[in-house]
Length: 190
Image (cartoon, rainbow, N blue to C red):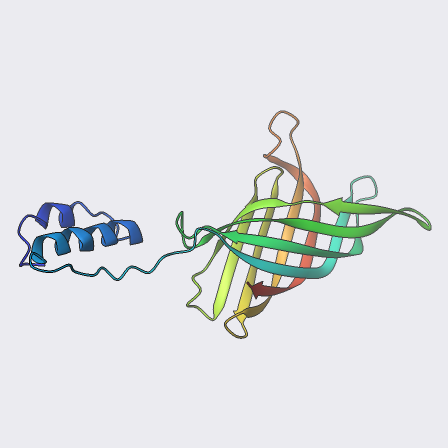
């Protein structure tokens, strides 16, 4: 870009090269050097929102505080991971639904439905092994896992979830553990 005088300050002002500031720099450069004809800026448009569907199935260990025992239950769920690449290419908002039947007393079951809402970090798509971590936004729950790319649109992985009771006044601060999940997951990139 030496042939375009006056761009040095703009280049030095870029702290972190990102899509928006690099496209602006390319346009400013073309305005200075393309005086006789119109120059083309090849800009790849980024999606505003992208979704990944995640099917989960596994075991929920519910901790019974009175008896101090772990009781396993099967749990199934579906999560939608909303990718916001214009905000950050590694962050997702994730929400969905979990369903399980919990035995309250001998042969007496209740249906439990949960709606998690988390913010998640997933390692870049260029990696074959992609670790992920998430934190609950409406209740204290934490997730960690790893996924393996099978092909461009499908990944498989495992996840652990920890759900906590919270303090009454600070609903998002964990007080004591309520349950934890061990889940297998299939990710579909839409």
